[in-house]
Image 1: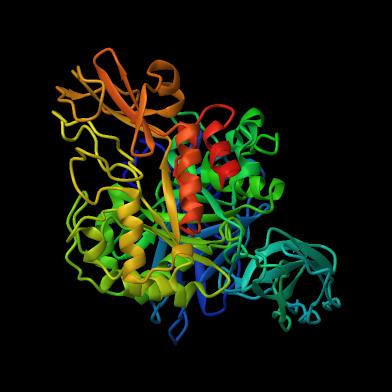
Image 2 (image 1 turned 45 degrees about the horizontal axis):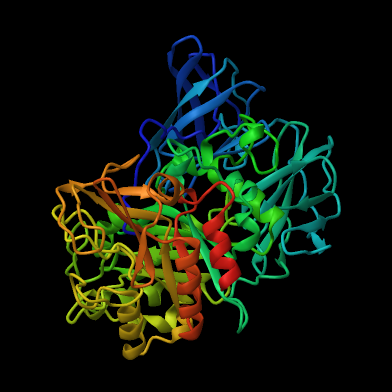
Length: 606
């Protein structure tokens, strides 16, 4: 989007509960060829620093390591590094990173964390054996349970059952593994796994744990394919109605996912683009971890009406979107990467499209939130052209990137992209192979707004989202009609083009002329940024005084604004239908009124 990413400061703590540990050093218990020891590195009363050290005491190399332990309730980790840490209840698991898994004989590696609480680790295991390098004397590990059977498979859940394992002193519980990762520990021989993604393949196995906390071998695996998976575009005749939800809107704007419900907008849309993920070092990356998956929402802020708790597996916007999808199962959510601020990373990504696609897939399909997302949206501003920075990766780079993403994400995920609307001769549409890339995308969000604005401080005043050209337009080709015509002429199917609507206005001050084309002295004042203001503010503070090229403008005092209203949106939707376009999208939800009148205008007229 043309909007800048407003990164929220001060909220980047990784809340992966590890543990508050008291002793200064404590070797735990289990791996015959390796040991794991804990050291408390610091203590500040309410929290502490801790470090685990894994050492290869054997005669051959170790290719990977997993440390497991238990902590008492009330002890948690506030941040961790050099290991991936997860938990199931009070049982914690730390796995090596890609760069520190291999240990030669005699070698050691450490990972650390900051913790809260005062508990100590217990029942430590390293790669399934005792952390002190010894086995439990006189006690055999349990046998493998029977291969699970699957029943009651739905879009989002499956019931598993298995025959019991045996052990000379008794089986305490079972670990349930989904795709090789522990997702639950249960005392019975059955488990129902929920929160899955529709139309997706999973593999399940189980392993037993005895009363001495020894872990036996894993069972055979059962393959499960969930039902549903309707992440393909809507059927012919249906139109996409997509809105962008910004991760940073939960801060100063105080606009939460719940507002989609209270405004009535959730029942009138088909898709949400969550903006933005970062693009850095050639990879997809988290944009704002606190907003994305850590912020605790109160009961009155939550879609479900229940407050987040400190120890729930997923919080933040992702969990709120999960709750929204449970309430409105027709809505599909895509994670959008890039945007104006973070598009500079696409040039590096384009050097190795396959590696970029893999990184994006790994992030979007992270087991913690894979069920939240139905695909990926790429907002590259702009391939082989200039936005905040200039890209020189070549005309084929965009096509290559989209091809790699489609190959990795497959047919059951949506792959879309936001594109320039520069329909001028020799403009940005011509700079990249959008037509060649179209075969890999479900649709393009054509950003048919921000054509003109107060970055040209002295004007001339002009509507920022003209549908068609008009006498006196400052630059030929800067219209919705020109952009769509250029895409279609290049070979992009009309049904893969979405018209864009801005839920905001752009304006100047120092303007004396009512009609477009006047001179100005600079940008008009705005709530968050000069020269820009939400529709919900402008509709009352500076009501429309005229229309030009299918959009509204307003001259009030010395200010001149242009923005879309329900009436102009109705006209644009009619035009989009007549052009055979695939639908409409908008930037972004929080600019609308509390009762969602702009979303209603899109929905009812499309």
